[in-house]
Length: 115
Length: 111
Image 1: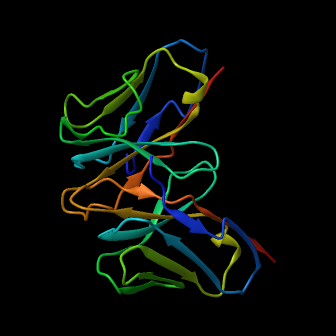
Image 2: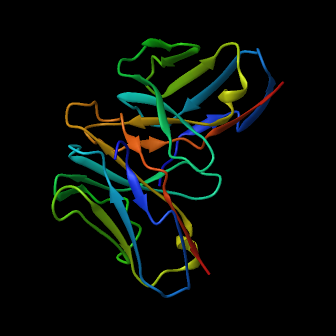
């Protein structure tokens, strides 16, 4: 597709369950970012991939959060033992190497609700 | 995590009015950007600034990179209904390529 695609758009789960969120970046974009946006807040950085490797994972809040990008395209954000505080919109963004660092293309996000 | 401080938090204006919002940080940034987010959508880039003191325009939008590198402002002239949304500043510091976002300014435009 033309833009960044994220699935599911909405996910409701119970406390303690495992969740996977998927991001399909713009074709050819080697840089991929995950952000988390809580209600009424700006997006907060989680992790940045350059190709297949995580170049910066300093924003992951704890070891329940993990992300992979095995073939340098699609990425999956994995959350184990979900807690109510994990409820937020998870945004994915991508960027081409030829674009300046801050000029990201965002998807519409995956809204996660933990009951 | 760190977030940049934006003001005002929200604003209600009439169509045709000019708008000004700003963003401040306790640390220096090398790049400042302004994004707009509509409900249910991801943020969309409006303007990017790369040099201290730089003033850049994009249509009715004008943004400036503060000379101290710790602030930026965004002006919107002659507002229209589709300007409604949340405006976020964002910055990049040091050699990192990750963005730090502001707390947002919610803009409402009345006819």
